[in-house]
Image (tube, one colour):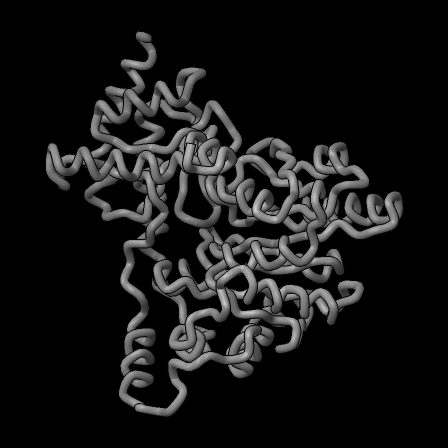
Length: 395
């Protein structure tokens, strides 16, 4: 075999998201785009705010020297200062520009964090349901992902986290608002988690880092507030991107912010900056860094997502599907009406509806639906969901 055995294995069990997205593309070729209801990929369909386009035009027209040049591997100072100010406002802790590293999306941020902290065999806790790539990111740097099931309503279960912490545990990745469940972990849960992590640090003599992955932070519903987490546990890093809030996922611009209270802070940040280079990211895109530096208070109008959430809720409820309404992001994670959610996703596919099986997120028995699609796509799925549930009941 010419492909490495590990990569071949990854390929066989890799992203159900991409698999279903590709299946959706096939069905659209056969039946036409207007006949397929594709809820497979969390690809924002809203246009970026007009300020973003105006900023790009201004930068392109400036003709300034060095606009597209390399910069310090941590990123442009002015951009990092903007991010530090944002983090201070959101988290109640100011990382300072020297505690911020600009990255190729939140994925780049998580990877440089893991590269800097993991020794071979170290463990990283991931809370199921979780974004499927986390396991691959941990493996990239010699670690082992340890899944822990969420509790009721997909809330994080601190006691379950504490039960799997060992002397090998180096970090936990927390994603809130969560992909795929839409859960926002409340402050009470995060305080209990911080207490669990503090107890573990005392027991094993080294901290468990908390990597807070929050690219959906600004997309929340029903006046839900996202709790600050950096002031609850000093050994916290925040990974974020502008992909969702500005609707620019293909531009791959994000950052990692490191709490100033982390032990050996400067050494850790320097290791992450080095990782940013040697992993091949080199620099976050220069043009995007300059663009977002002036857009801190700008966010896409996500009211269409709110409207679609409510529309989809009615359709799923009418079809007889059980689900926890998402409090943030743009995903539903309903329970499958039959035990094998892959089989149910196949039934949905027969109805030209594309959904992603929950086992791809470490939680079999559920399936994910992305509602960052046109309202008409959601509306025309109603009859298909009803037929699929009825058919599943006869299987």
